Image (cartoon, rainbow over all chains, first blue to last red; front, top):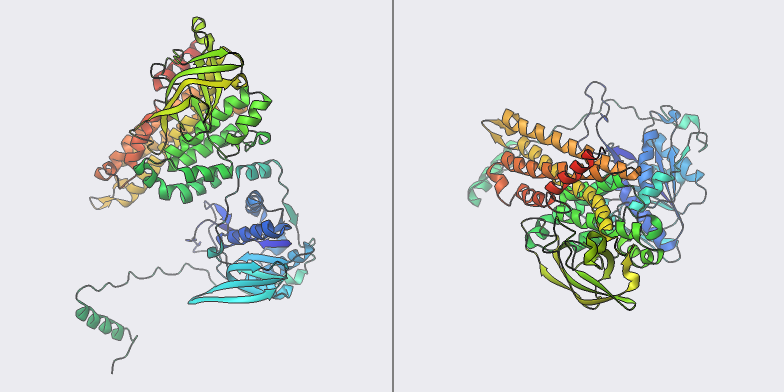
Length: 266
Length: 371
């Protein structure tokens, strides 16, 4: 089975700092990691390979330093790693990125399944997976906590997490799945894997031409989204804790809710 | 990447459970198995013998990161790599390597090193354990004590006197396996620190082993021991460095969080002085540790460098642990905070694999010889 995993290199913090002047992320001094959800996608890909055989190809679109993330993927056990990198991609929004990733998936040749994380911790859009599936023209199952591929390597039963439960979806390969952290526990790269990567690393780099990307579809030209402003959300208030006997606190609670127009009492 | 991997493993798999293992004095079998699966237990052994094929510098990084979370796990890893794998790799025949090195390098089982005896500590030449050739076999009699990984190890590097009249040249190295007839375990020590680590007696009563268990050359055991301990010291130095770093980490965290006189104590000059000295000594230790590892990797002499690294890192660990408790005040003295454990764990690094006094002796002899 040919498994393609999409990963993104992100700053290692959920508390991303933003330059108030430029509105862009401050990346200096923040170590980079494989986006956590994507690591779970990679683990799922490695497990599928262990069960059915085949290859795991990891694709990442980003600047040259994203190669580090791909090396880690390699040390974890990926067979092929490709960095999709070109100055022409600069300024790509999620649509242009999805297009470039779609072209990259197609460039890998034969593929059966595409896996990715639900969303990246720096952008939090959760749009890349669904858009890529649409552009590839294959079914998508998002928020997966279980991906069960039948022995015929065609039918798939996937469990997706919802806010108040889960949904079981049946589909057929080829398809794209995005996963959340509950799906598995990613393995640590082994010493041997790391030593192999350090001695013999062959992260390939594909540019826009290599993946046959149309210039109009990538970079700023291919990005209908315009970022007006980026900001860290205001920290939530401290909240209010009511203490005392239930009768008293209930009355107080109702008063607060009424004051804030949450409920109206006739 | 090794550092990142080991650090994540230590944070996720060791840190949450370390207090429990230490309190119960239970060997962290699960953690050791996990480290074995990742290839850490034999990371310095070449791949053809089941190891990770890493250099010594990476090894110091790994032992530091592990010990930062758990010094007991750190010494188990160090002993296996340095004191068990290294002599087998360096002095073993191809058959011995396949039979005894591969299983302890690939993470299947552990190794141990039996040199110390009740009356042969710093004076390691005073070996009372006797090996007698008997036909095609050797018969071993005697007791080793304070042996790390004893009872949980499968492979034991054991030193015994073959010919007392020759002094240190009468000592020979043997490979013992758990279950060899006449090989049992005695007292398991109850210790101040590294309580999740096992130190116990090896008891040999007419223990009969085949002649192919002789490691290296008959009568060259003392040299094997000294060369192996040079490597071991790099491991213990890395362990001490990890403990010292943990002392600094916790002290910084506490100094930022704890408020007295209306501000975090980290804004008090007295605390700042302790933190600054701690950070500087830790970094100096790190440089010495990595340098000793680098010397070994580069094929240069490293006996003096390993002794310096061990001396400085272990004394830094003990000193930093004392200061870490001071920074924490009363909280540092109770078991709710880990610094009292660092204090108990740090002490042993000034003692085992050569006391600080022996390190100074090694360093002095080297400098006096113009090295």
